[in-house]
Amino acid sequence: MRKARFTDEQIVRILQEADRDPIPAVAKRHGVSEASIYVWSKRFGDMRTDDVKRLRNLEQENSRLKKILAERDLEIEVMKEINCKKVVSVQARLAQARYAIERGVSQRRACALLQVARSGLTYACKMPIKDAPIVQAMRHYSGKYPRFGARRVRIFLRRDGIALGRDRTARIWAKHGLQVPAKKPKKRYRPERTQIGASSRPNEVWSYDFVFDACANGQKLKCLTMIDEFTKESLFIDVAGSIRGKRVVEVLQAVAAERGYPTYLRSDNGPEFVSTVLLEWASTNGMTNMLIEPGKPWQNGTNESFNGKFRDECLAMNWFHSRKHAKVLIEQWREHYNTIRPHSSLDYQTPLEYVSGWNSSSTTGAFVSK
Image (cartoon, rainbow, N blue to C red; front, side):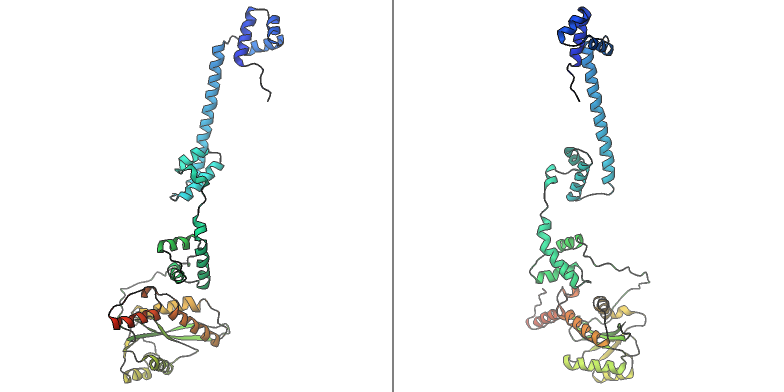
């Protein structure tokens, strides 16, 4: 836009001269046409220089107030958009401040509204770079063990030489969406749970039960799971299409020949576990059968917990082509369970590590958990 040659004050002064002197003389003196002086006289009339200054100040004040009002309306609109929920972290508030600046709010005002330092807008966070190798290792173990959470992965990282605290592990694990999807618990009646005859030493109480599944070729799987309640060690998993009382005795005899006979056998009241063959064999070898009460599986809670892990981490994660294929994969998982998988109930040791520590404590008198 072309800049005016004369200011409003100068025009008023020229008009005052025109009141005293002839208009042609005034126009020649200031280098303007007579028509311009007539146009100015219609525009400014009888206004004096002070009136023009006051009018200009009023216009400037009006413009400033309009600007303030527009900025306030913009701030209110932006704050409504970004304050949909309570924000606590500095990084989240900095992100909102950047958004407000993009919407037209000044940098100083945006930082004041969101209570962040202006220097934080240009700060580059160093934690993602620092956490990058940890995230890569976590993703590796998350892909390898999809049903493991942050606590067990933290043990694997510690074995690899990456020492992390629980809070930092949980923060990184949750930030990158590696959590195991939670299963919705079924609403059911839950009476008081007690476990009868808790074990106090290795090879004292063996508990066993059945888990069922199927193969891709249609073959049925019946798995006899057997664990030591004290060490949580998986003693044996027998995989077959049908397992009766005589087969259960054969499996127990084979495991007992290697480890020795236990004092107690805990199971439910299934027909395989109350058969005459099994009861006579247990009585002959000095063992006591502890049968849980009907309808109370929590009394065999240690084995039920193992069966849940067995199904979640092995049966549900593998596609068995045949029964022979299932036997191989299940045995591999059992070895992993005993030698690699950390157990929270054993202070995140493996069953074999726990047994080794317990045997050392029985000779030295002191047991130190890892």
